[in-house]
Image (cartoon, rainbow, N blue to C red; front, side):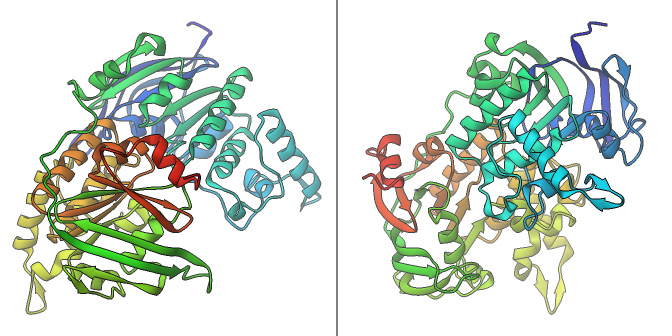
Length: 508
């Protein structure tokens, strides 16, 4: 066997009841390379990584994995064993303890001891050594909750490298990072490569593959479509491999014809509910037309999410301002109150706020809509099933049946469930906070088409996105926020990346 091959997947197949998640997947990964794994949600990427990191132990799948020339046989409950073997994974959702220091998190569960007592000097000196070796710009004694997301990501990487990882799996590592933080992460990965660490890089941001990876493997429907040097692949070719067809345009052009103003916010001020006197919204003015997609742009921390959560009655304490729906002033005090007035929210955190992960797809779809199915304190199960099945079919939710729990679905299909449950309520206004975050290129296109269809039917959409191209590509107008203010609203024809960034940074 070629000694330069550190990982060799041979005909790996993983089956679940009613679905084959991986089918005879064969991939070779070279020592010290950065290898990209891409594919649509449900393509099998996460399943493959769960096998490699020990979530699914040896014997629960078919085929073999060779690691450093030896068969990898991870036992049951073997995540710890995988780390001992030098295989570590950094998940999209950070797993740090907020009130602990960087050093405490890095060595959590494996603290250096002396006579049964933690040796704090060694813990922090060892942390400092790791941080310096891999050029991770964070202090060992910093408290995690005081760090930005980018530095938290560095701590996660340091935590994995503290166990001398030979293979580092990064699953959607840039989903919550700013452009500057992404640049820093790319530098860190180059440093890891120089130290001989093999990285497996998974992301839905396809341009990042071309920035950092040496080779790319594409999965589709659980099968390996191709493995190629990154230099031999184009963006258009990569998309075609992923979805099995060409996507002529990233942002489909709808036939929207916005009508009269249906929703207005005037001089809105709101305080942080956990910090009295701290304003998070400081004078928001916006208007939304019937059948319009209004994009909201701004840097992280500008108050975008706080705005839609407050308008949905679930965040800030409103201290001033007016909100009008169809020319009538309204006061929204809770989510149930917002829903009753025709407002719906697809939240930024679909797992924490959008779904009850342990519940079935059926129950998640019907949960906000029980009033449609209840009759004299009883739920009409047949009506619930019919309506839920219709929504699942309309959004092409991939699931063996509606009774499986939502945590068994891919990220893209989970997002479709979140959207579908709100569409069942026939909203007048739909808030969408980063609706395509962590969603593959094919699913993004489907969500964009759905947004167009909703707007054409008269639903008004306020969309937040961290992807400025998405905001510009999908919006009729763009409202820009800076430090809790609404700075200016631009028509799509005049909104450019340069203008929006100037407003978002306070330079304009």
